[in-house]
Length: 273
Image (cartoon, rainbow, N blue to C red; front, top):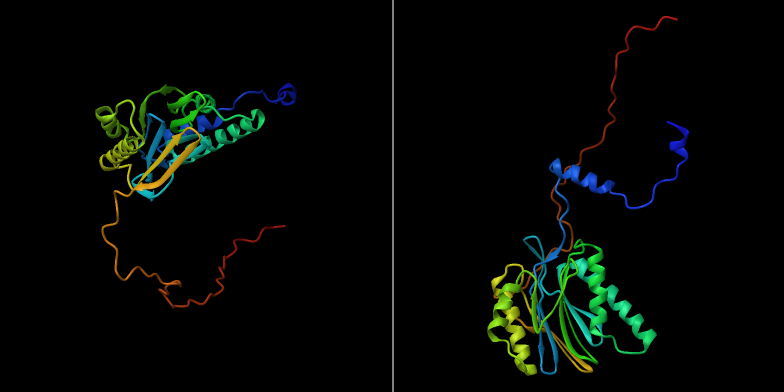
């Protein structure tokens, strides 16, 4: 190896060695690991006094329901909340990170966080990762400029709408909104419409299910209605309950003693000196 090749420092920039390795493994039939995704229905709407967000509570891992009562409405600021769909770890991490940044911003300015600030931080982070952070979000809140509702897609694009849906059950929920939404809804009408949209996703999408969570945000106040509706109660519960043994069951008591195994290898012709 020439001396110049050894003395040169390594070049800067990104290394795509793992991308080439993953592509090679994929061609050989090795499937990449799966992610825990939430087949989800999340919605939001603007009513006369603020914003109402809603979400189901089922978390799935492929065909398996791994959590029947998870929380998909995440705290961002006292006046801002965010619903998350996609990979559970990504939605948790992104909302927690931006929530801490908003907290530091409030300490620095001494003022209430604005919804557009949270929107800019979220969309910038997601755009930087080009969709590899699988977080589809519905952001809602009320600040000094009034109520705001935004959707943020995993690639960083955003929409500003009077009502919005995201997740695998979004089409069923949007059908309810498009047929029944009107401007100037009261609080009770808005909560009822959001609950109906989430139930539509629960009953028409296999990835959505369990209960309905609702968050009502108004000027200077928020109300988090955890398990507001329980449309899927357990239809059968054993009157005796379920009991499980407290010790490991003994399946076999045969004891095989260990014996030293010696292998004798016959030597060949002795080497001549």
